[in-house]
Image (cartoon, rainbow, N blue to C red; front, side):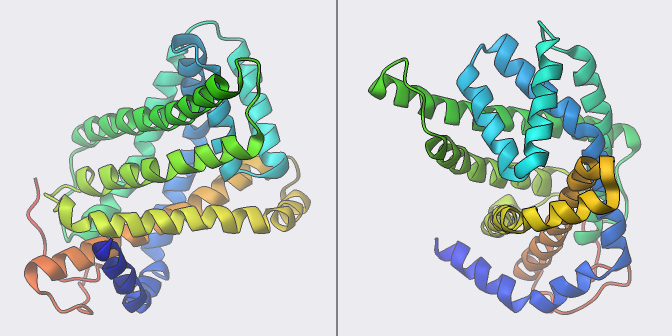
Length: 301
């Protein structure tokens, strides 16, 4: 806890360098590239997760937990629209959908490609992986993140089964309980996903133990964004609906992914900056010519 508090103080002290990074053109280019690929990967990813819960694990409680997690990100009519179409599409599939899995592999690789370039810049790595190596690492991360998403649903589903064991097999858990369980399960999973990305995606050796407290802080920021989104969403939805009409839900996914991508990128820049200061005693406000907040390349793998 002390390390997490110290990381929170570092975040406050580093607000200006983080703000400068968020105003850089390249940060927005990376975030838009990530958001576009998230838009392409979202539906196949959700279909694969639902198919696993429904047709492989035969676990309706986990599927219900995934619904509440989805609505945690996308409130109101957007959440209703997405979940309805996901369940309709999933109902046509009686077995695991391999085409969705292949589409997921193809589109999700596009998410990790700009992420690797951005993380390499953050760590001062001048050479990116080859495309084939990036695809291999991306596929491993896709499988890891997908497994963690299933674990999140499984933990919530296990909590619902405990409720049924205590209240009776015919009882239905109240919505607030499912939502609370989903939130409790989603936060550590979010931190683990961020940790995997920050440690294994850069083309260099990353000190995982040093960056872990800062990864927790980035996870807290992402979780806070969910609450802000829930508060602002009724107003934003009306704005998007008036401006984009039938594309309102696609724009919602794109906008949320862009903002989340900026947080992940800024978090990567900040964690790398602080880790390198800690390891090499670099001056905190030195700026690298390549746009990084620190000078000096790290050793590439």
